[in-house]
Amino acid sequence: MNAVRGLAAVVMCAAVSLASAAQGLVAVKSPYEAKVTMDKLESLVKERGLQVFARVDHAAGASKVGKSLRPTEVLIFGNPQGGTPFMECAQTAGIDLPLKALVWEDASGQVWLGYNDPAYLAQRHGMAGCPVVENLRKALGGLAAATVAP
Image (cartoon, rainbow, N blue to C red; front, side, top):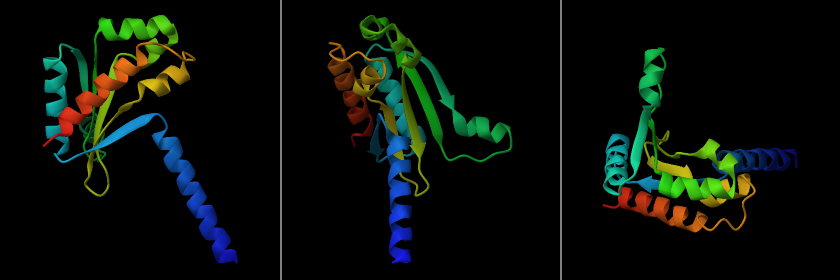
């Protein structure tokens, strides 16, 4: 009986940890290496007329302080045409803009492309019914799908 309770506690803790870590994050498997995935994403972002503000290589930063980190990069991008209407619904959404996408390699070697779900951001900033949320969801989903497409 104690073993069953212990197992149940472990499972519950793991489920809560996973739910907390992934809340609001859309993650898509990539068939490519991390660098290739990020290069493809950056290229598509530029092709679609969005501005790339920064590309942050967390693994390179870690190595500068003598640490090791699997490939982990963030792309910060956007444009006022998409971001301004989002902030018109709630100016506090500006803390989550420009948009960001994360490419990382997990412990098993699987590469992922993740981004914040605009619907989650809308909920976070109390802007239910913001008319641009669905457009942002489609745009980000399209970018992600095109990036990981074979």
